[in-house]
Length: 97
Length: 137
Length: 81
Image (cartoon, rainbow over all chains, first blue to last red; front, side, top):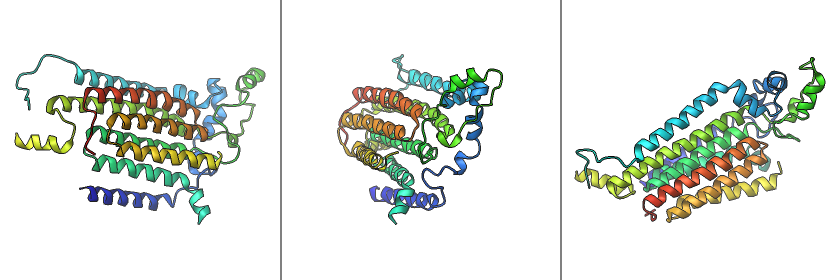
């Protein structure tokens, strides 16, 4: 089992290395990730939201519904933890091993 | 060769951490160890996204310089103040990963709660012992 | 972005990751995972992602470690691998 998981990990690593060779270099200022959408946010953040911190303005203003969804995820996780860990009545048919 | 390794080094770090986490999720039998491996795996993915936001050469954090002052001085002429984009790091991956970190901790909490439930029921955390108990009925 | 400093941080991150999955004491593994999160946070400060860095330091290295220690204290501390 251990040998099998080592082999699977190395295979995944090899596939990722094969994919990484086509990626832009580290710190490339003209990479596709930093040349398409994010200049818009950097340019218009001050006039749209009057906030110098671009990360905060995108998080709370441009993508406010995204943050609302994130809060829903955290709320659901808390509810799930409470439901799992509460010390309630023992249910019928619970198996003790 | 050395130049090649250095210019792609974030991918090597990401792949190495991902392999460590993947191996821990598959090969370790203890459930808490599996959860630790999952945490390392998710951190590696966040590392990959953050490293795509780096721009070389005197790049600072994405907080606009003299932001309030420019806004006050411009008055009605909003947008007259041009922002040098090459000076700031790409803010978009930061925002997405800010969300991902919070979701990561939510996942961790639910996983630990499930592990505690399994311990209460089977009185062990080792995967093979749990499977043995399940097979015995 | 100072390359030698980055490389030292990456070395520490790898040491912490490998130590966290090899240590047999689960409480030590969880504390090493907290140290891993802090080194990751320093690495992101190096990459000019300060918002992500302080979210990681407070949420992942703080609350995550507390959750893990709570879980380990409710279950068994020793592990077989």
